[in-house]
Length: 307
Ligand SMILES: [Zn+2]
Image 1 (cartoon, rainbow, N blue to C red):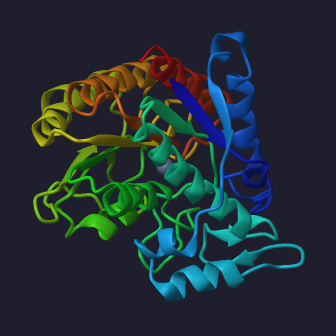
Image 2 (cartoon, rainbow, N blue to C red):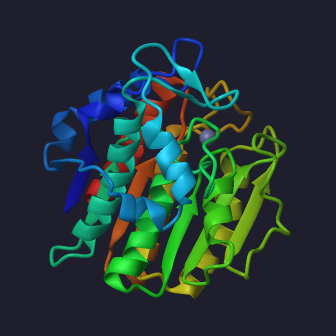
């Protein structure tokens, strides 16, 4: 069973026309999934994350600061890339809440898979800082929930966004119950993610070089990263699904196509099937060319639906 979590509030976070992370991104993804091929998906309205859920990975100061920023109009700039509009705090609560609800659902009696079509994205948000379009770290909130509420001992996060998930790494660098595996372009924002950043042995960073494409990406995952996931035997697999390693993405220089996203999804579904009774939650991170994003997300969700 595949569930799709989203909320209309996620379209109300509007950083402004100069920002690539736009409401049009989510509209494009939802439009691509509004198709007969996806009729079997169970569509669920995302709840808001609670403070308790956010405080498992963020400082109280960070949570209160984000929730207190509510401009009447226009935007408030938190850093060069990260802005908040009147609807941003609610969008951020729904984005994190989607992953929590999805974790609860797949760890429930029915099991299955879930895709969270949400924004703002999350993987750059650190314990105490919003950055890189991200306010709360949605995937980390979900992983912490699986540990705290469901008692899991092994949760894996696979991050194939073209940017390094520095926030997720910061949050879990000393948490051996979480394995964080990331492929990403280097050099590139946020300039972290070297292979020697290993946490307590639970962080696996696999940089790719500008210009790398399908062959290098698949080789890296097949020979190095997928075996690490199998060795960890996760009880739940979370995916930070960014589609900005696509060759047409304007923010980076890798050369993937939508068929590569279908491929990596199949491989990750195999990991979840082998160790986690198929239990997998994927959440949207980046992807800034609307056509590349929507075709890649559809390829990803199509494979989850086959799972
Ligand atoms: Zn990205």
